[in-house]
Amino acid sequence: MSLFVIADLHLCQGKPEKTMSIFNGWKNYQELIKKNWLEIVKPDDTVVIAGDISWGMSLQDSLQDFRFIENLTGKKIIIKGNHDYWWSTKKKMDDFLVAEGCRSIQILHNNHFRYGNYGICGTRGWVSIKGETQDEKVLKREVQRLETSIKSALTENLQPVVFLHYPPIFATNFNYDILDVLYRYNIKDCYYGHIHGRSAHELSIKNTYDGINFHLISGDYLQFIPEKVV
Image 1 (tube, rainbow, N blue to C red):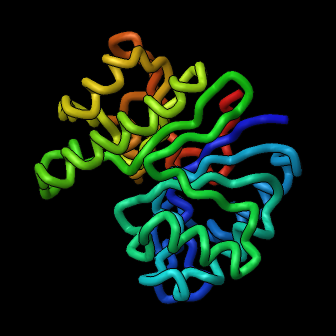
Image 2: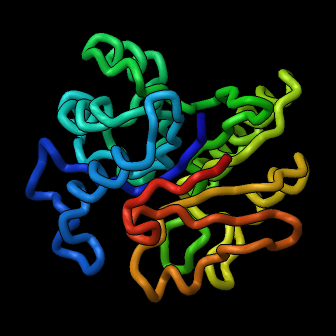
């Protein structure tokens, strides 16, 4: 039994016009996701998918992408990315997935999931990249969601591992509000996606910084191979 992670699947099973294959490093990416996943993920494994999952604009629009994920091995835990416009309330998403038979997919949203002695925690996060629009209200809400998720794991005496979509640090840009939560709760490992392209990958933090191990897990950076956490 192992825990894996990957972000930015950008599936477009129901919206083929939204394919990422036009970009460098994304050729045949949906085929690669399926091939690589099935080669390494076993039925009793768990995979966290850290945002930008489907290009669908609604849950119904994204159904083919959910079924694509459902047909992959293992249990899947998903968080919201900036392009997941289909995201709704947790209850609505849970009810939809159950009704459509996608029972291996679970929502990480103001909660945590136990994995051994670890607590799988996280949220979308918010931007820390120069030139991207900031929104203080959204940032405050994401900080609260992250803290709620971590606290819920701590109540079960679990060691929190944090999964975000947005990077808390990118190049010389720091999201101090998110970082403050990580420092306050002594988080040791933080996994994040969102960053695409070789030049951007090179500017990303992929090592230990201020006592936190940061891991870039964007799909194209991982070459669409889920990364083992534990």
